[in-house]
Image 1 (cartoon, rainbow, N blue to C red):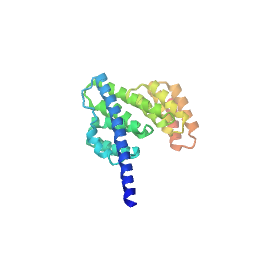
Image 2 (cartoon, rainbow, N blue to C red):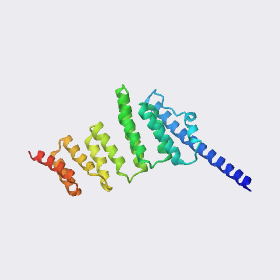
Image 3 (cartoon, rainbow, N blue to C red):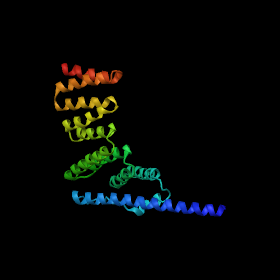
Image 4 (cartoon, rainbow, N blue to C red):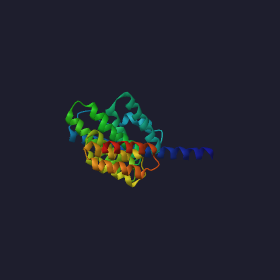
Amino acid sequence: MYSLMRKKYNRLSYIVLTAAIVYLFSVMALVQQDINHWRVEKDISSNLVIEPGSFINMFMISGFEGLAVDLLWLRMDEEWHKGRWYEMLPIVTAITYIQPNFLQAWELGGWHLAYNMSSYTKDARQAEQFIDEGIKFLKRGIAKNRNEWELYFNLGWIYYNKLKDYDRAVYYLRKTGRFKHPSYVDRLIAHAYRKSGDRKKEAEEWKRCIAIHPDDKYNREIANKFLKAIKG
C-alpha cells in the first residue's frame, strides 16, 4: 500500500514539475520575444538576452509561481550588486509576467531603465530611449495595477526629476489623490509648480497640502516655510 501511494505521489510530483518547467519556459519565451523586438526597434546592440539554460536549474525545484519569483528576485539582486545592469532587465521583466501585481518589480524596472541604464550608456540618443522605455514600463504596470498610488508617483517622479517636464509630472502625481498616499506626494506637486515658475498655483498647492494633511506637523512646517517665501 505504501509503495503504491509513493508511486502515485512521485507521478504527481513529476506532472507538477513538468508543468512548471513548461510554464516557465513559455514565460521566458515571451520575455525574449519582447526583448529581441526592443533591441531591433531601438537599434541596441547590447546583449539583452535570456538564456533559459542558466535559469532552469533554479526553476526545476518548484511548480509554484511565488517561489519562481523569489528565485528570480534573488538572482536580480545578485546582478544589481555586481553592477551588471543589462542582466537585470530580462529578469525583472520575467517577474512582471509571472506576477503582474508585484508592484516593487514594476517600480524597480522603471527606475532601472530610466536611471541606471540611461546613465550607463555613453550614447545620448540611447539614454533618451532608455528613459522612454522606463516610462513605458511603468505605464504597463499601471495598466495592470490601476488602484495603486506608487506607480503613478514613480512615473510622475521621472517626469519631474529626470525630464523636468513639470506639467506632465503634475498630471500623474494628481492621480495619486484617488488613493491614500503620503504627504510628500502633494508637496512634490507644489514643488513642480515652483520649478515651473507658477507662484500662484504653488501657493494654492501648499495651502492644499496643509488642508488635506492637517495632522502632519512636518508637512505643515514645510508648507508654511514656502508660503512665507512666496509672500516675500
